[in-house]
Image 1 (spheres, protein in one colour):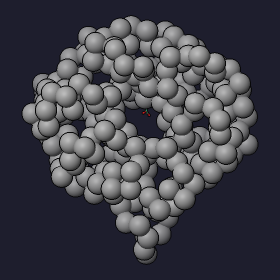
Image 2: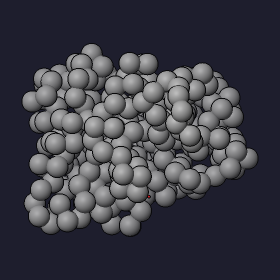
Image 3: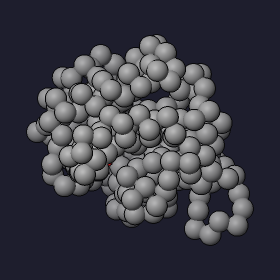
Image 4: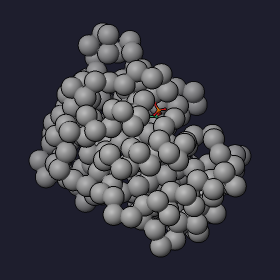
Length: 250
Ligand code: PEP
């Protein structure tokens, strides 16, 4: 790990506005000169209040999803225009829960990625294999296919706004963390694919986060790996103590 790490919390469908504000108050007053850049993706309803609450701190606030159209008859959806209006700093796209539970496919995710990048929204693109794909030794192939399809028509220049999160599905919310060696191997492969799709500079400059049961007791080992630039964290980002401990150890 050479870059300043990014420690990102994905809060999924947890925390009301009040709970979000209580958390951010403690977090922002506890941060001083930590190395890590801190990202948090609360619920849509908390975004506006969260953005206001972190003003002047180094915490970045982002959305967990968005639609690819700017507006329209899409009941229940949120557009980039709505996110830009409250000045969110980033959006998470392609999370495995969106892919598996809500059946989002690579083509849809690519449309969302292009919309986010065309509106200058930093994007955390999640990719990762299932347990079966890993057992079948398909991990590298799956990662290459996802990157190729999800980044279709994304320019070299736009890659500056892409952060990749390698999140093996079998490690998300299960307590099974990929060993740092397994994660490093996948991250190295992702860099090779980015070199093939773009060039070495793009591959080296792109942040690649690891996600999957990251906790205070495994963050240091993961970040010691050369190609792991930070972490995307679900469960352990919901408690301010454990999230802070992860930030402090990064
Ligand atoms: C996630 O939801 O992106 C995630 C990595 O969750 P957890 O840390 O709970 O495995």
